[in-house]
Length: 267
Length: 60
Image 1 (cartoon, rainbow over the protein chains, first blue to last red):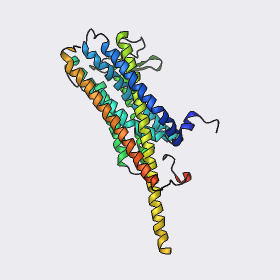
Image 2 (cartoon, helix red, strand yellow):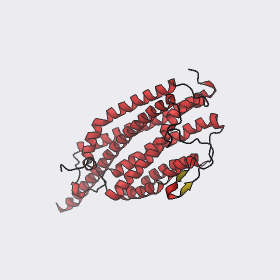
Image 3 (cartoon, rainbow over the protein chains, first blue to last red):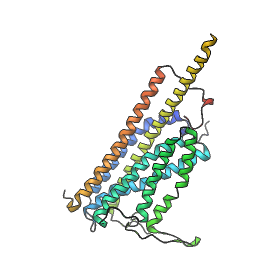
Image 4 (cartoon, rainbow over the protein chains, first blue to last red):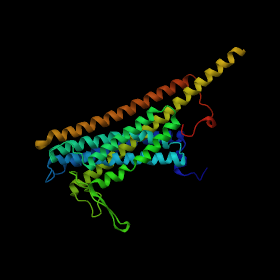
């Protein structure tokens, strides 16, 4: 027992509930504090020389877009944990992450659209980046719908996990949709699609392309919203564990009532 | 603070952001409270879970 890994220790839902109950309030408070600091720095930063004041949208749009993708990666990772390692909390994690990831994807789409209108002159174009993020949103909805359409929980978990792993192909597609992909030693050359969306300004091989007065507030904001994502995910996992305990107790109650009913004529 | 000619788009972005995250947080808090209440009710009625060996691996 002393050689248990952290994941093995957290595999016990009772231990997870105890640990997360202690961590969650602090994590939520830290998330709010870092978001407030990041947005304060963002709103007091100078306007962009090209985009003017609309650059303020970047401090929420970019973290939302990153978390939309990270959320799906978390769903896929948890699904892998369920299918391969049968980790007891893997399905709980995948189920809890889906609506949160969907919410951040929706926010990335809406804020991007509201940023696009004054900058591009249109709310929407059917280009590779915008369309692939819309597909990501539909994938999230598909995962939620598939799970809720199957009553048998074990089967629903497995089928949802398979769909999540198949859908993970959308993540590299979103990334290369604007920038293309070049891996010379593999002879791989995927050209960038024609798009209005700008390429990444932060995570680049040649370093960030935005000024530090905008870069640091963006990073603070991204860290803050990531902490919020994990706090919401932890809360969602706690809710799901409680829901499964309620279900388990209800089944036990019905079993007991049936047993009592079956025993009654014999008495 | 003067947000210039595109103030509506900036404020709408932040408004939607706050609205969606507030709704998500409220739903999670409400759901948690509801599950806790249901669990407390069942336990108050004396219902106990079946043995661990009878449980399934993905049902905590």
